[in-house]
Length: 464
Image (cartoon, rainbow, N blue to C red; front, top):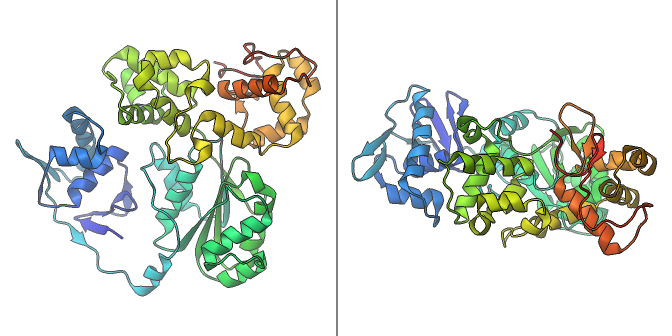
């Protein structure tokens, strides 16, 4: 672990956190990266080019971007009475002026508690500081992070695990390829016991864990949610203090489960420039667009308003924002905003190294759709096909409707009990109906997404 201190501050570069007298100092992701590049070389002059390369990699940014984040970084320390921690050396660069003390080696029990297979976060979280601190502090033995595809459930679960890995063993199990209880037990056994014998049972795994203080992260549970629910409930009840943190597009509905709903990043408020720039969703979108090589004039009010509108239309979902950001270079901000009436056609260039379900918005929706029951699939398509509230209530079974809500495939209108499909979900459902060439819903086939949402349940953009 890279754990160090200076004055009344402590920091851990791997866990990406700085504390002042035990209280976390909130830094933006870029500000922390700048801090890390300086604090790792205390007393040395670090040139501007070195900092930019460390923080932005090969992405071209001007010194103005560096200065903006340095101002935020200095202010965070100034507010804690640590003025002058970062000094400018004219014409050369910057120096971290505080004396840094490396903590002594950890004692054996704590070193043992660091065992596990949890990966470090691949990238810093944006706009999740408050929820990360709160959920990491809540020590429920069984909890599930529930949210729509692309909301960042996996990244948040890993971040929670990394905050707790100093005090317990944390194990990560990817269940996205699991298809039944046997696959589940095999994956858990491989992570916890370093083997995946077919004779494994929940009881044998729990007996092997015993009273060990561990956390087990079960990621991507929606396709085998019934098996995971049974396993998690039995495992927790059969061990002394083990914790289970699951991620899923629907709750496990296990005894003792604490459900934590994750939505998109906070959206921009009004069109005031200061309010726009403070939005995590907008900041994430702009950062991703710049990283993808786009040129954006963030000083232009119209550009900011259009970018904010894009963030709102995509509900602040990190995956959708990332996919949209990759199109700014070829479409421009205004062109992207105009093209989002066909979101599945536009949002289709994900990272090559991403899981298959994250390489396009269509792939992400297909992943969710495949976890639905036949009744829920019919209800999903019906919502995109039906134009009147009366026919909708007659055609959609209440249980199927509740299933779509539970599985994070419907959006709620703020302040009401109305549920509806997003633009992307409506287009995906419409394509399914058209592709299958059927009219199972007693209505004409639909050539595209339904342009007539109703106030209660419908498709299309979020009602105002």
